[in-house]
Length: 309
Image (cartoon, rainbow, N blue to C red; front, side):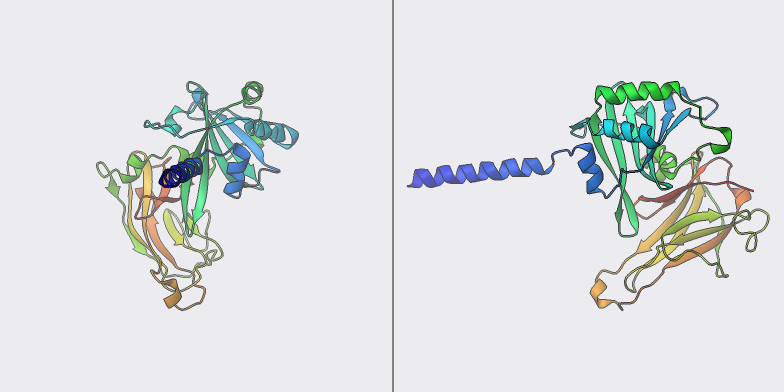
């Protein structure tokens, strides 16, 4: 009887091990998209040919309607892979960058590394007022590679009056952890908290530097207005503040300190809209740098391509 019990115990432990191992199994592309609530129906596709950059601009092909549907369907044929154990720089290794856009919003960023024959999917997962980037690895199907070759033949065919604006995901793609935490060669920028009137969008989180082009009734000349808003929060106890503004040779960084209640049930159950605003002089910022809004844990809350008037 003891032997039988031991065998049953061993089998049970083996079964638990198999189940535990299966929890980390990579998901097929369509299942991964569904997991993060991404609707692939109706998406358009922007393919940037990063290895062919000319004068700082990546050649691009824009796909929509049936061509976009066919391209996205080819991604569902790809084979899920485990995330590599070695240090791998996704953004610097990619030869192609593919942005899926649905109804004007970038919903997924994809990279294709020709040397490793990998597709890497980048998805922003919402966690309260923050966004955490998640990555999934795939080996492409030959259909995907064939469609990529066809798209390459059509690059730079987007009409001049319909040029694609650099998306938040594309801007975010070139930012590394080292760039976020770099302390050497950083230059502080003076700012002053702003308590004037401004009808910010309280229905959503906003992280943005506004110029006189955006708010002519509020700003003039080289004045800039930094706005950081958590959007609607379910209780009191939430807060956001600016802790530092600086720039390096790669980024303009707006550091934010966000707070949330330890015990939400003990807070007043009323919707709040925490935000902070500050004025700055845009002449203090170098031109052409990406603005990154960063919290105390070096999470990127949002990015922006600053257009200085």
